[in-house]
Structure formats: structure tokens, C-alpha cells
Length: 301
Image (cartoon, rainbow, N blue to C red; front, side, top):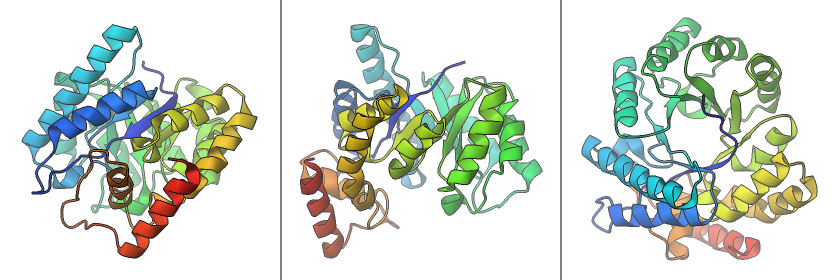
């Protein structure tokens, strides 16, 4: 089973001015991430605007990600993983998307809790039981704020006993729950990764036994986010804290007017491929732009 640790970037999906996907811009961003020393990339998640993408667009994004990472791994001898978002509130579709990710060469599938349906504990378990049978490592994604349903620790513990479950992206924002996950699940499955879904909680989570971050901020600062996470994992807390507080203003600004609108705004300010967002998302307000620009300058990004 793959062991996830460090910093993984929740990739944006760059758009052209006409709203079409900027595939070459996405390729450039993947290369930028790899050259910046990121530990892995995670396209087609929330930050990638996946609900608004067509399946053929998703296919091409997966292929580009796998292709560029494969070239990088062969060149460097590293094993940087590609984590592909395959979640759905329809279990049948989640299984289908997970199979597609596996067939196209992804290393891990990121599967979110079914949203809108608000399934029971048994429904949540059976959903992950179904995707676990695909035969690719599964990173569970717990984000109650977007799905309406939290995965309680007892349910996650049961899910962790399934084959091919490699960890959780924990974005509940509840540090107490994160501690319970580390204490309960990692105690019986030491290779089970507990990754933060919130940039600002990366250092606290690692401090209580977590394994890293699936980051939005690393879209623009992969080297700094990766260094912060890995310094903390290596026990170099002094440097990790310095980087945490250096980046803290942008940890906040990167979500000031929603995600991915805010991070795309920041990337556009730094002439990186990002572009606009697709409805129902809209570009950030003028007031938010000022906050984002100030934070970028303050952090030296």
C-alpha cells in the first residue's frame, strides 16, 4: 500500500478567456509543481472545479498529469504520486470514475463523502466499500462543510479496515476529531495517512501525529508548502513554524472569497495559468483582490 506523507497540491483547472480548459496551462502548472519539489499532485478535486468539467476534459487532465509525472519520475528516480479526485454522490458513478483513474494510470483516488444525499453511517461505509473494490489506493475525503455529512471516527475506523484504503484528507476543521483519528485509526494501521485539508492546520495536524497536507496554497508556493510540511515531519519545528507564520496571511487570503476563485486570482496576479472560473463560481470582488494582493506581497510570493 502506498504511504502518503508531505505536501500534495489540489490543482486548479486553468481556463481560457472563453471558459474552455487551458490544457497547456495545466501542463505548465504540473511541471511547476514538480520542479518546486511538491510530494504529489491532486487534480480533479474541489479546487479543480470538477463538478463543472465535462468527462472528456477530465480524461485529458488525468492523461496530462500522469504523463508529466511519469516523465519526471523516470528522469529523477522519484516516485511522485498522482492523486485523482473520483468522488460522486452516486456510488455507481464514483466506482466508474475510480476505475477510469486506475485505467489511466493514477496512483491514488481521492473519494469524497457522498454529498447532498446525506447518507447514514451504514451508507457512508457501503459507499467506500464499493470504491475500495476497484483495486486502487483510496484516500477518503472528509469535508462536512461541502458535503453536509461528517465521517465520524468510528465509521472511518471501520472504513480503514477495508482493502486499498490508504488514508484520509481530513477537512472537518475539527482538531479534536483529527486527534481521535490519529489515536484510533493510525494506532491499528500505522501506514494510514492523515492529511490536512486546510493549509492553516497543516502544522498543528503534523504536531499531533498527522502526515501532511493536500494544499491549495501550494498551487502558487509548492516549494515553501512542501518545505514547511517536511520540516515538521522531520522534527525541525523551528523552521516549520517560521514558514507557517510566513505563509499564514496567504493561508487566510487564499479562501477570502471562495475556492478556487481566490487562489486563481492570486495565480493570475503572478502570471501563472489560472484564468477565470465557471459558473456558478464567479471571480473575486475588488475588495478581495486587494486582500489577496496584500497577502502575496506580505508573504513574499
